[in-house]
Image 1 (cartoon, helix red, strand yellow):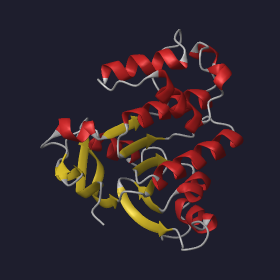
Image 2 (image 1 turned 60 degrees about the vertical axis):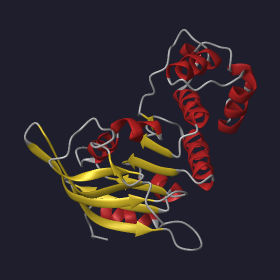
Image 3 (image 1 turned 180 degrees about the horizontal axis):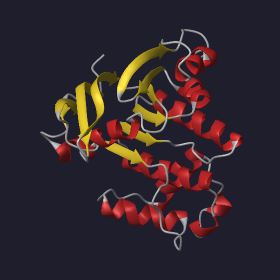
Image 4 (image 1 turned 180 degrees about the vertical axis):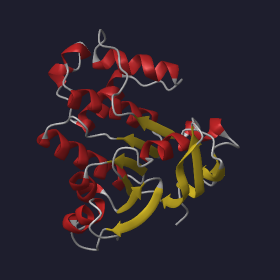
Length: 239
């Protein structure tokens, strides 16, 4: 299957330091790929390369087969990005935030479509007209994911999406991400959460000091082995 996202021998420098070195991986439609690593491993650098916010020193970041640097507008048209802390307006409700950001993206949606998206992400109806200043982080993440659903992009980029969430919210979020992949979306998630990556990902790439040092794949039955990934993450073994 053709990759929706692909890093091809991707090397990126920041402040004259090599942050990614010759990294290659692909993410197919319907797949969740977790790029796992500690702080400073280069995870967010990889993600920012797919957004066209960093220019590779060599190699390429590709979206639907085309280099992002060759056609940035086309790449962003098919990609939705969820940062670690979603930038939403505190004084607006969920409905108002979604209406505003959809208008910026020139993607109209009526109230019924917005509510269907909010149903999908599990935001309770009684919360939807309250100001986001009263929301938990998990509730904000749901609004941000609803925005991605309403834009109907085939590719999602998730930057530490479960950071700061409680265990129940993490499980809910991972279930949602899995359902989005089942809708044939390609999802790249960068994270340091070993358990969450094993819970939701089809494949995991282990990133250490800018290099891919291991890979794991979900078996036909069950999930990726958390203990094996944790051992590799901690440096006790290399996958």
